[in-house]
Length: 143
Length: 157
Image (cartoon, rainbow over all chains, first blue to last red; front, top):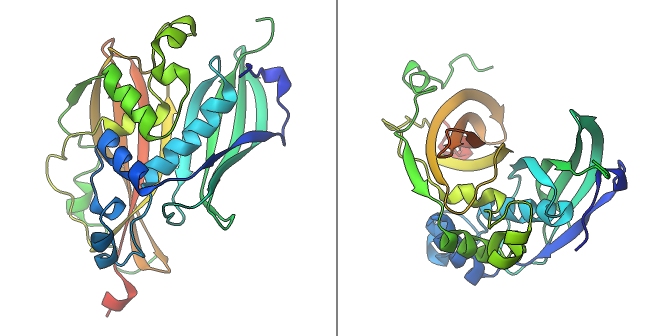
């Protein structure tokens, strides 16, 4: 994967989309790796008793997917400065999710190329359930 | 605004009261396991050889790995006014990379309380800030999370 530079980016550009599909197995792995053992993410009966349709994806895992959307796109020389997300709707396992983003602003601040993006995780029906924003610093050519 | 606020003095007393600090060692195995759990194959997060040639000279943690460095319990339990709670969102700011071998000290405090009328009746918004400080005393990152506490419509008078 090549490095993207500040000069390569224009407002309105699309961030390379990242498809995801969280299986129940992934939710269990994430519970273990993150230490979030709330049963609504792996115990179907528990989730239903709490008024949910079944197990749901951890908000923080969706946040992680959106983090990857940006770290994949910005390359190893890019730096993630800010990552914010709003959990507007639940997401369930085994759906074809897509993380997407669009460049909304770019500017040079103190010799650093700052780029802002609107981002969102879209569910299987294409609805953005988890919108957010990211701010990254991209390298500038020849500096 | 409703005439009677759900925000009590007892709740306000929790503002800016930090949890007891907890210090974590950032272990290589834990970082790799986290990257695998989120399905992220970026070599910076799990390939020692490749990461050594990169800008950090070694493996760094994916940004949201910080989620696994869980803050300690609040000094006293926050008196939630309603039985139902939702995770509203998260806002990270990153200042320093998190490297394998770092020692990260984590504290958390409620920093803002607000209320709003919405489709779920009166909702209390609780904003907490978690601070991650590395072994050099540098603030490596902060995370602000918003919890939403609400009464279900069925439970309202």
